[in-house]
Length: 262
Figure (cartoon, rainbow, N blue to C red):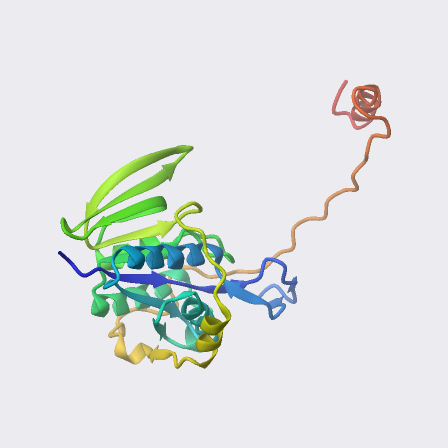
């Protein structure tokens, strides 16, 4: 029987209610309101659920970056993950995802987890790319949008349910494996006050880039952000005065005025 080692990748992202403004074609102004990405919290909860079944399981949460990465890791501690690592520093804040995946994979090679769990997508760019990229760097299988999992430590197997276009495909894999968490895999709990206080005082282990042996990688990567553009403004909305079906005549008349109906 294996002793499961599980790594969870987390990211700090702007709160969905934070005010974001374009200050120039190259810069955004983001209100200082950040949270751990929603799908990453599902991934953390899934790892904790596995530990309930296998109390000897080793859990570690990793986040790449500077101060915001530390905030995400404190959230992981508050939820119940005791071992956390900050990988890299502020210098990678604006790096593209391929480089972020590269440095996370470099650290994971040293940790050798049986299972890596990521959120399906980050709550800021929604690119859903880090998980599969990390798996490719590690040359291990991966599966996305996972809604169920069951580890059989005695058989060294994992059974997963993957949501695909309204259906659930049930798959089985050996270890190591990387999966990305979809809604339904777990329900994040609200951390107790004592865990939150512990998280605020916890010392976060830092893994500098120099220890990762990735000098051959070109940090500028393959993707360049050319500019930010505000979405076009929407025309004013016209509300029909009468309830349905009395408003049908008025609707037809207005559509004819716009040339949409002849």
